[in-house]
Amino acid sequence: MIDIFTTGGTIDKIYFDALSEYHIGPTPLPDILAENNVYVPHRVTQLMRKDSLELTDGDRQAIHDAVAASDADKILVTHGTDTMVQTGMVLADITDKTIVLTGAMQPATLRNSDAEFNVGFALAATQTLPHGVYIAMNGEVFDPATTKKDRDAHRFIRA
Image (cartoon, rainbow, N blue to C red; front, side):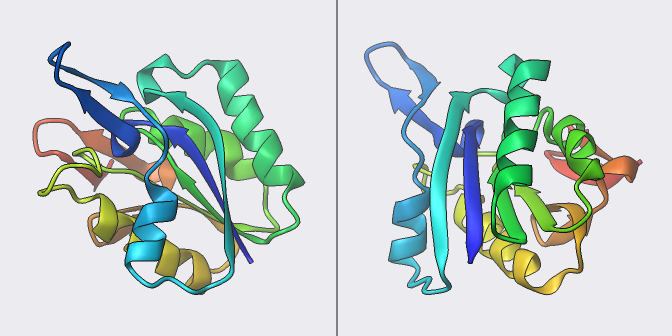
Protein backbone atom coordinates (compact mmCIF):
# COMPACT_ATOMS: atom_id res chain seq x y z
CA MET A 1 0.00 0.00 0.00
CA ILE A 2 1.21 3.49 -0.85
CA ASP A 3 -0.33 6.38 1.04
CA ILE A 4 -0.53 9.52 -1.10
CA PHE A 5 -1.04 12.76 0.77
CA THR A 6 -1.83 15.92 -1.21
CA THR A 7 -1.24 19.38 0.18
CA GLY A 8 -1.94 21.70 -2.75
CA GLY A 9 0.74 23.60 -4.58
CA THR A 10 1.00 24.25 -8.30
CA ILE A 11 0.18 20.64 -9.17
CA ASP A 12 -3.36 21.21 -7.81
CA LYS A 13 -3.92 24.69 -9.28
CA ILE A 14 -6.82 25.36 -11.58
CA TYR A 15 -7.44 28.40 -13.75
CA PHE A 16 -10.33 30.71 -12.92
CA ASP A 17 -10.90 32.48 -16.22
CA ALA A 18 -13.21 35.15 -14.83
CA LEU A 19 -10.54 36.14 -12.34
CA SER A 20 -7.57 35.59 -14.69
CA GLU A 21 -5.69 33.76 -11.97
CA TYR A 22 -5.02 30.33 -10.54
CA HIS A 23 -6.39 28.86 -7.30
CA ILE A 24 -5.77 25.56 -5.55
CA GLY A 25 -8.57 23.17 -6.47
CA PRO A 26 -9.44 19.56 -5.81
CA THR A 27 -6.43 17.34 -6.33
CA PRO A 28 -6.12 15.78 -9.80
CA LEU A 29 -4.18 12.81 -8.38
CA PRO A 30 -6.97 10.22 -8.53
CA ASP A 31 -7.61 11.13 -12.19
CA ILE A 32 -3.89 11.12 -13.06
CA LEU A 33 -3.47 7.67 -11.52
CA ALA A 34 -6.61 6.24 -13.17
CA GLU A 35 -5.85 7.70 -16.60
CA ASN A 36 -2.35 6.23 -16.49
CA ASN A 37 -3.54 2.75 -15.48
CA VAL A 38 -1.85 2.77 -12.07
CA TYR A 39 -2.91 -0.40 -10.30
CA VAL A 40 -0.41 -0.47 -7.43
CA PRO A 41 -2.47 -0.41 -4.22
CA HIS A 42 -2.76 3.18 -3.02
CA ARG A 43 -5.04 5.59 -1.24
CA VAL A 44 -5.19 9.34 -1.77
CA THR A 45 -5.88 11.73 1.10
CA GLN A 46 -6.09 15.46 0.52
CA LEU A 47 -4.65 17.03 3.66
CA MET A 48 -4.99 20.65 2.60
CA ARG A 49 -5.31 22.95 -0.41
CA LYS A 50 -2.56 25.54 0.01
CA ASP A 51 0.19 27.13 -1.98
CA SER A 52 3.38 26.01 -0.29
CA LEU A 53 4.34 29.63 0.42
CA GLU A 54 1.23 29.78 2.63
CA LEU A 55 2.05 26.64 4.64
CA THR A 56 2.59 27.30 8.33
CA ASP A 57 4.60 25.37 10.89
CA GLY A 58 1.26 23.95 12.03
CA ASP A 59 0.51 22.75 8.49
CA ARG A 60 3.91 21.08 8.28
CA GLN A 61 3.24 19.42 11.64
CA ALA A 62 -0.11 18.16 10.29
CA ILE A 63 1.70 16.66 7.27
CA HIS A 64 4.27 15.11 9.61
CA ASP A 65 1.56 13.68 11.87
CA ALA A 66 -0.38 12.17 8.94
CA VAL A 67 2.76 10.54 7.53
CA ALA A 68 3.88 9.26 10.94
CA ALA A 69 0.41 7.85 11.71
CA SER A 70 0.06 6.03 8.38
CA ASP A 71 0.13 2.25 8.52
CA ALA A 72 1.93 2.27 5.15
CA ASP A 73 5.71 2.37 4.96
CA LYS A 74 5.63 3.91 1.46
CA ILE A 75 4.43 7.50 1.35
CA LEU A 76 4.07 9.95 -1.54
CA VAL A 77 3.40 13.62 -0.72
CA THR A 78 2.42 16.09 -3.42
CA HIS A 79 3.51 19.56 -2.44
CA GLY A 80 4.23 23.00 -3.80
CA THR A 81 7.81 23.35 -4.99
CA ASP A 82 8.67 26.60 -3.21
CA THR A 83 8.86 25.08 0.29
CA MET A 84 9.07 21.37 -0.51
CA VAL A 85 12.62 21.21 0.89
CA GLN A 86 11.46 22.76 4.18
CA THR A 87 8.69 20.16 4.58
CA GLY A 88 11.12 17.38 3.67
CA MET A 89 13.36 18.50 6.52
CA VAL A 90 10.41 18.39 8.96
CA LEU A 91 9.75 14.77 7.90
CA ALA A 92 13.40 13.70 8.35
CA ASP A 93 12.86 12.25 11.83
CA ILE A 94 10.50 9.59 10.44
CA THR A 95 13.00 6.83 9.73
CA ASP A 96 10.84 3.73 9.25
CA LYS A 97 9.21 4.80 5.96
CA THR A 98 10.12 5.73 2.41
CA ILE A 99 8.76 9.26 1.96
CA VAL A 100 8.90 10.93 -1.44
CA LEU A 101 7.78 14.51 -2.08
CA THR A 102 6.93 15.68 -5.58
CA GLY A 103 5.08 18.48 -7.29
CA ALA A 104 4.98 20.36 -10.55
CA MET A 105 6.24 23.57 -12.06
CA GLN A 106 3.00 23.87 -14.08
CA PRO A 107 -0.54 22.92 -12.97
CA ALA A 108 -1.57 19.35 -13.83
CA THR A 109 -4.51 20.74 -15.79
CA LEU A 110 -2.19 22.32 -18.38
CA ARG A 111 -1.15 20.35 -21.46
CA ASN A 112 2.56 21.11 -21.02
CA SER A 113 2.66 20.28 -17.32
CA ASP A 114 5.37 18.13 -15.78
CA ALA A 115 2.84 16.86 -13.21
CA GLU A 116 2.04 13.44 -14.70
CA PHE A 117 5.70 12.60 -15.27
CA ASN A 118 6.68 13.73 -11.78
CA VAL A 119 3.88 11.75 -10.14
CA GLY A 120 4.82 8.60 -12.07
CA PHE A 121 8.51 9.07 -11.34
CA ALA A 122 7.83 9.70 -7.64
CA LEU A 123 5.52 6.69 -7.46
CA ALA A 124 8.32 4.49 -8.82
CA ALA A 125 10.83 6.09 -6.44
CA THR A 126 8.52 5.42 -3.50
CA GLN A 127 8.48 1.72 -4.38
CA THR A 128 12.22 1.31 -4.97
CA LEU A 129 14.13 3.61 -2.60
CA PRO A 130 15.15 2.55 0.92
CA HIS A 131 13.58 4.19 3.94
CA GLY A 132 14.32 7.91 4.09
CA VAL A 133 12.98 11.23 2.84
CA TYR A 134 13.45 12.24 -0.80
CA ILE A 135 12.39 14.82 -3.34
CA ALA A 136 11.64 13.38 -6.78
CA MET A 137 11.35 16.02 -9.49
CA ASN A 138 11.89 15.98 -13.24
CA GLY A 139 13.69 12.63 -13.34
CA GLU A 140 16.04 13.21 -10.41
CA VAL A 141 15.97 12.15 -6.78
CA PHE A 142 17.28 14.58 -4.17
CA ASP A 143 18.04 14.61 -0.46
CA PRO A 144 16.13 17.55 1.07
CA ALA A 145 19.13 18.30 3.31
CA THR A 146 21.31 19.09 0.29
CA THR A 147 18.80 20.48 -2.19
CA LYS A 148 17.31 23.80 -3.17
CA LYS A 149 14.93 25.07 -5.80
CA ASP A 150 16.57 27.09 -8.57
CA ARG A 151 13.71 29.46 -9.40
CA ASP A 152 15.40 30.86 -12.51
CA ALA A 153 16.04 27.42 -14.02
CA HIS A 154 12.65 26.03 -12.87
CA ARG A 155 14.26 22.96 -11.33
CA PHE A 156 15.82 21.55 -8.20
CA ILE A 157 19.58 21.41 -7.79
CA ARG A 158 22.01 20.06 -5.25
CA ALA A 159 23.02 22.87 -2.90
